Amino acid sequence: MSEIQIDIVSDAVCPWCFIGKRRLEAALERLRADRPDIAPRIRWLPYFLNPDTPVEGEPYRPFLEKKFGGPEKLAQIQAHVAEAGRTVGIDFAFERIEIRANTLRAHRLIHRMQKTGNADALVERLFAAHFLQGENIGDIAVLARLAGECGQEEAAAAAYLRSGEDEEEVRAQVERGQRLGITGVPFFIFNGRYGVGGAQPPEVLLDTLRQSLDAA
Image: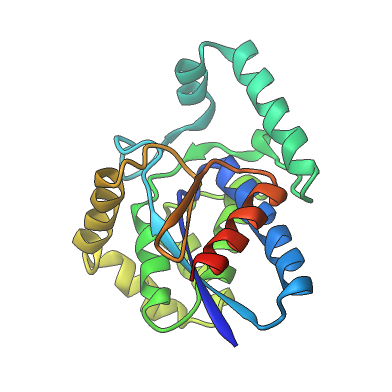
């Protein structure tokens, strides 16, 4: 088997990152049909969509209404996102979300899991908890439970999150992305050389996957 490294710069409160994950999965499924010898190795890298979010989070709708210019404009944007989500099997439940979370702890939990393995299942659960169940993914108890659902020991995950472990490393990763010129997410990097910004259609991601493999 040959590996392809896929780095995904993302934030768990970004709906387009959830959609981008699904679109990448579709692209990889098509790639496997042609190249069953290719094994993707996915690494999730942190980004703060709203770096000034308080540690305890903030009310969801008021923040977005202010950011996007009022309730009508927000409704239009969310309708557009919801339509895109349905095409990849995501039924966004924006009405359930009360808190816009600070995602530093979520990124730290992803970082912790990637020290020993793959974090895809955790990332999926983070997206689902926020966008489908409306849970506060900045809350330690919620995050520890999600870690438990992914095979981690809940008490150990909670203790880790209460500590400051890996906080500086996660912040440093965000800064490295900024130095590379990444100003929006999702952002995909294939084999360290080919970058694609935005939740592009599977066809675009597949084309870039193939380009990166040909170059390698």
